[in-house]
Image (cartoon, rainbow, N blue to C red; front, top):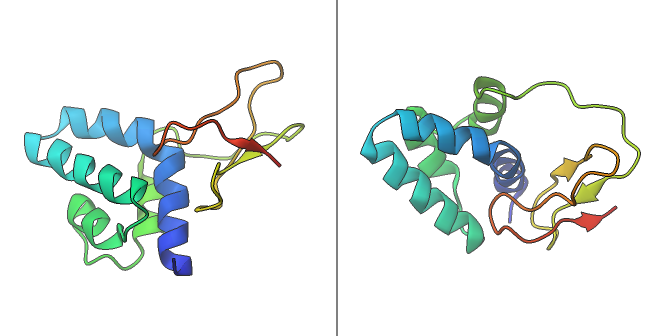
Length: 115
């Protein structure tokens, strides 16, 4: 997986709940395309071209557009215990609230692994 795809997967995984909610407010086409993107991400296939279609762009700059345009994206919080992608396919890092549940991968729903 090249670095652009890895970054796209990282951002997708972190923003998937917000992206699902946004697509639910949009057309059925958006929902179907997001489903195809999720299936490709689970299979670790390229997703940037499909993300470009979803965002209405040519695919260049998709990870930045995705991460900065969705609700809920913003600065993180101080880290105590961090978790990362369960199979190392992306660079997502989650820092749960103290005593909170172990975060799960947005793409596969697998528990994330401690860092």
